[in-house]
Length: 282
Image (tube, rainbow, N blue to C red; front, side, top):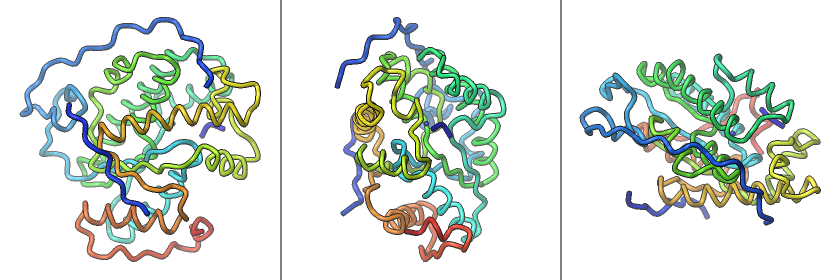
């Protein structure tokens, strides 16, 4: 169902079958050396050419989590809350670029694309959005809410056998978010939510391309467990703010608002959804 150093401890706010190895990946890209003055501290590796950190007046807030973790619901609620507080809000997500978004959708629908090709197309989709959606918004003082970010894309590539350094190198020029939240749920919970929502589970969110199981349920559970383990690794490295995605929507949203309010200097975190979004408040 398509619509995706020194280690620091992950911040916590709240109360297999083997996969056949894919063809060898190309050697990982090597980040070019750059000084901090050129903006490297704003990126995971080398900075974008011509980047001026003084131009960034908005904030990039990322919501990560597996399929069925509740990300999209929280993005909609947070957008309404922030706009009610007077902020301009832009959203981003996977497969939303004008350049290749539809092309990726078509390839996913055919279930016929190699792992590396798909990873490279997602990277193209991501950086097209960075250039034409995310950076322009941040330069104008807009708050950007990202429904997934490079962490999902790296994790998906790694569990499919693509070299971890290669995947990280692809996204070396990605902006570091101001806040990264991880909605952590059990794969069993995620399966129930996804199935209730669409009465189906997509080929890709169940990892069927990886031949993990002939059974749809177990394929989903095994694949999403692998993704969850990748999030656990990245949470420590990139200091995710981990939230209990098993909690109710209002409870998770309250915690999100509290942390975002601290980041943006918002005094009150009171919020009641409009009638258009009240069906999500449960």
